[in-house]
Image (cartoon, rainbow, N blue to C red; front, side, top):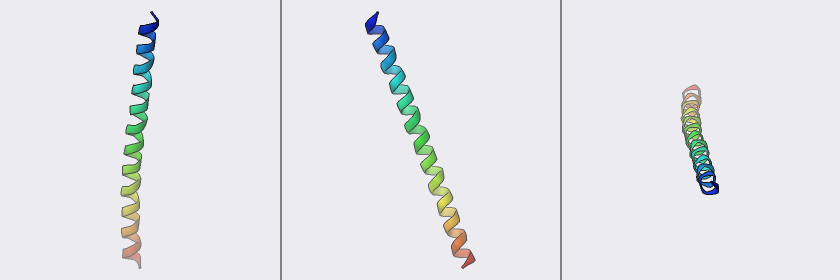
Length: 46
């Protein structure tokens, strides 16, 4: 049963890693969008 456990462990690591990458991509995307919006506001103010 060691092989099955190793396979399940690999799947778990793969899923958690891709989930983290996915979340990081979304966070960076929204973070950059927010910065663009605030930069536009600064330009309008000045």
